[in-house]
Image (cartoon, rainbow, N blue to C red; front, side, top):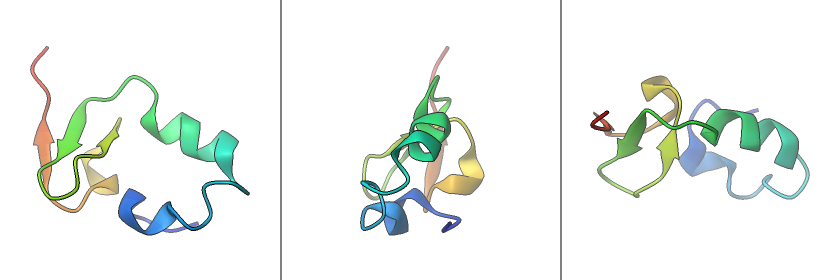
Length: 51
């Protein structure tokens, strides 16, 4: 599995359960593509979401 969510869009259908785990309870948003994740390591240009 890829390290960045931006690169996962092609395998989203086949690895949906793992994808859901990465985006549940998001703490960061990517300033480049707008994706959210629960780890900044998964995003290209992460920005912490306000609490």
